[in-house]
Length: 370
Ligand SMILES: NC(=O)c1ccc[n+]([C@@H]2O[C@H](COP(=O)([O-])OP(=O)(O)OC[C@H]3O[C@@H](n4cnc5c(N)ncnc54)[C@H](O)[C@@H]3O)[C@@H](O)[C@H]2O)c1
Image (cartoon, rainbow, N blue to C red):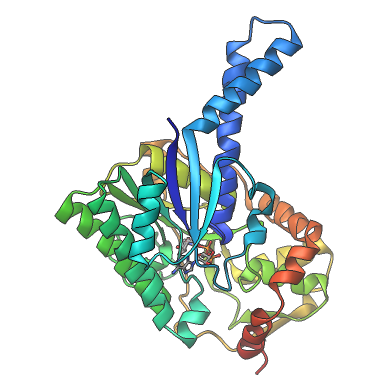
């Protein structure tokens, strides 16, 4: 019997990568199984047949339903290659819509939820905080109430290292670092994290949290640092860098984040928080220069712009717990990750053109044309 997982926010950057990762993972596992099973069979046809059979069986094990509101950050083009996959279904709607969430749980026979849905952009939260409260806090509460009432077997909240606040030049965030959010975005994510743990404690639901550092990779909306710099550099436009460019972030390739999420969903302990990081701390300026170098463009394209209010100076994550307890490690280093990300943006000009039209252009003007 197939297990159906509800993915919320699956049309966004990380959610869409995760859905693709899960559908591919099921296939890879089954091919490996088929190869093991047929190791003594010499005929190619037999092997192919065995692979086909086990692919069918393994994919029966996981079905994905994706609930997404399709805000400016949600884009069904991110999922075009799998939109007709027989183990995938898209539903348009909001996570705060309790009636809809409950209907989906009943009609789709949902066993667990992974909550990616969020207003996720710090700069936008500074312009207007309210949508962050609605989606990130009320939305998470709505999902938790449904998990409790339908006794779902698992709820995983995708959170962020930004809930810990800002670090000085030394030290790392661990899972026990007190939460000190400093932007409306991180405050709303921290509230949601508290709600998740309170529901475990109060109602005994099975739920856990991952807190990850900065992601980059294919399908990232070009408001975020790395895609913005890649696309501007390709067009030889100025690369706007906040303040002195020395804000430090820990970067992780999105596929490594996806494998961490799946590891935690399968093996993590209810009520626990797992930090996820790339062990790759870099100042923004170094990232921007690496992009220019790979693209063979001059550093003179860099332009310093006024710093963001309350801009956290340094995030650095200690991910020893997930490594030691669940056996996860990141696989892609920054150089390889940046190269394949740049290649993806070069290979997908149509996607870039589409997401950068309309509302995005208005936002860009407001933020950088001062
Ligand atoms: N991007 C990062 O570097 C990063 C790092 C750590 C954690 N996270 C967390 O991971 C999650 C996904 O991040 P992302 O970068 O993919 O974000 P994103 O902005 O690209 O995608 C968010 C998705 O949620 C959808 N959404 C927004 N409001 C919704 C609502 N009310 N109901 C249903 N869907 C809604 C959007 O349409 C979009 O598809 C977020 O919870 C974020 O806080 C992101």
